Structure formats: C-alpha cells, structure tokens
Image (cartoon, rainbow, N blue to C red; front, side):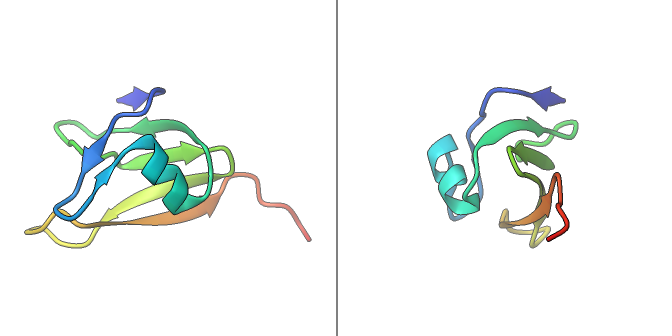
Length: 75
C-alpha cells in the first residue's frame, strides 16, 4: 500500500518520526510503501533517493536504510 503522508514506525531500539527519519537520511520524505500486514515500510521515497528498508534479524526488529539515487547524474 502506498502512503503519501508520513506514518511513524518503530523498531526495538528506535521510533522513527518524520523529523528523525529526515535527519537520518538527510533528505525530505515524499512517500512510503508498506507490504501487506507489515508495520514497517518496505520502501521510502525521498526527493533524491529510493530507500530500501532492510531488516537485520527475524527475531529482533532492527532495520537499516539502503539509499539508491533516484536521478543519478553523470559528473
């Protein structure tokens, strides 16, 4: 399900609000996608990145963010 307004989500060690998420990734939120019956988004879109939310463990709820540039430019 695509969501265009921020929805707070939590891991075992941290709660991500819009402010904390934007501070962590250094970019502005645009949308997020949740898989069925999941409380943590699978993907988050920002102005400059598509972020894949990866789970560390099946037992604990710990995550990492993998940032992929949305519009890479040749430098």
